[in-house]
Image 1 (cartoon, rainbow, N blue to C red):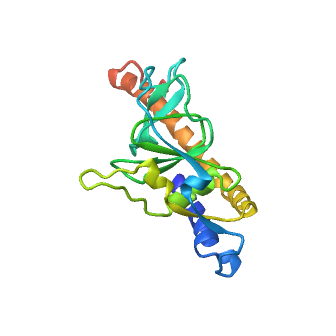
Image 2: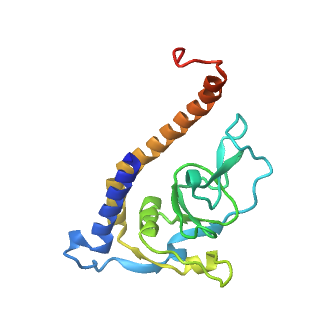
Image 3: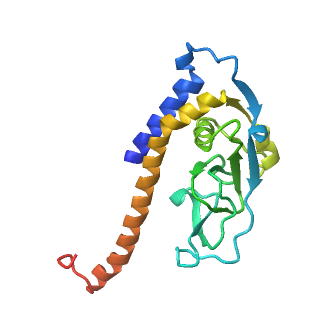
Length: 210
């Protein structure tokens, strides 16, 4: 619930700054522009599942693997080496097309997931994440729609002046970081639950012991 509230606040700030241009008397400043996504970010398609893969984190596999799923933010498993190390944004390219996630830690994207690494001379990952979350992303195809990298590169996005992007990023960063920490806490709590529940059910451990 806290995560959802913070996400709504960040989206509201984004819409007032960049959709309604509220701080600029409703008019887009002259030094802002529209650009194709491929001109301000490096886009790539996810590859095959790594040969080394574990469904849960273990000593040699701590790097998350993400797919196009929605559950647990698309977490598929864990591997030993990252493919993406920059702060970036992923977009589901098939099935749940347009599901957008901010990726702040090294990871590996696999098939049906597009990764966008922003060019820091123009935009930040947090700006791109909130921008893409605010628009409708379509796929192509008649039988099974998909989002292709060449087509996604052509999406036109609003690119403010760099100082505005950086100022905006500093504004929303505390909220997005709070969301990140809450998610990490939820994962740790889930691990504790999964470790304790079988012992409670079997009688090996009692509530009084806890």
